Length: 407
Image 1 (tube, rainbow, N blue to C red):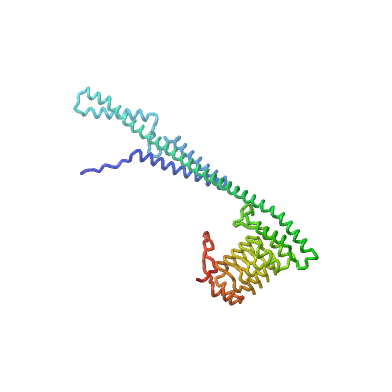
Image 2: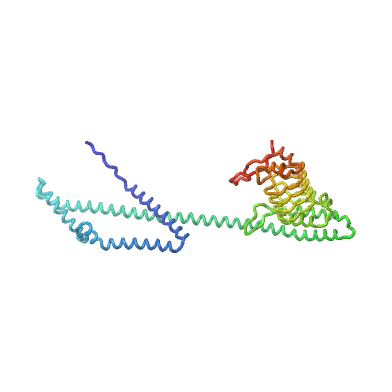
């Protein structure tokens, strides 16, 4: 019967195993250090105490090894004479074995002389190889621990460095926008001069119609176009979209002045540009805004009760929670506007230019303004548009109601 030879694992496999175990231990050590750092000193003291207790147990086992061996094996072992007794035993075995061999005496003497030495050499070689293997595995394991800790620590340093670079880039971007904001703010001095001249012309007793000169009108139009939107810091963070607070202030000043409403609409607003103006939470009741360019303007929570927004460009404007009671929206452009929770009671939406892709807060919004509010022009919206569930942006995770134009 042929016996199958047992597969013997090579030393390389054992060394690789030691390296892998060392790497795993290194990762656990590094992870435990992070855990300790994230929690309190009590956890650190507990871990140190456990390590000390294990070390003390190991020292006790070595120190009282004789008593422990005698306790479990019933015999005390003298480790100091163990090697000598082993050699004597080997000599006795060799002499007893050679006596039974049919050899001459001189050959038996040679066997008695060399056999113990060969056995000692084999034992010592095996012991030395075993020791070398243990030392190699230990060194590789220690190398794996150190290497793993260094690699993980290096990765952590890279992450910290990348974060600092990102923070630095963020600061550079903020400085760039702040420089732009500083340049834009200089236009406030120009606006102050324009408003001063406006007040002087309106206070002129000869100006009974409350109109403005062509020169001042041109300056106002040019100023509105020069006040371009920009990003600025709010609570140490740049706002998401560019905005123009100066345009909002200029428009409010014009609306609150005593300019003739028809003149304001036909001579100023028709050619001025108030896109991205900041007009949130402003009282613009009865405001004359016919034909005003208010694209991307922020009109959230603004009171536009009984205002004239006919032919106004309100595309992409934020009208969330704005009050549009009795507001004239004839031929107004509300495409992509934010109409969530906007109040439309008695508003006039006759012949509205576009309301495509406007955001609303309810799926029955079109039916609501037609049947419940009975708005003027709601039938046209009902026949041309529908409310669908869509994502507001690429980063959105949920679908929301939006007005979609029928094909």
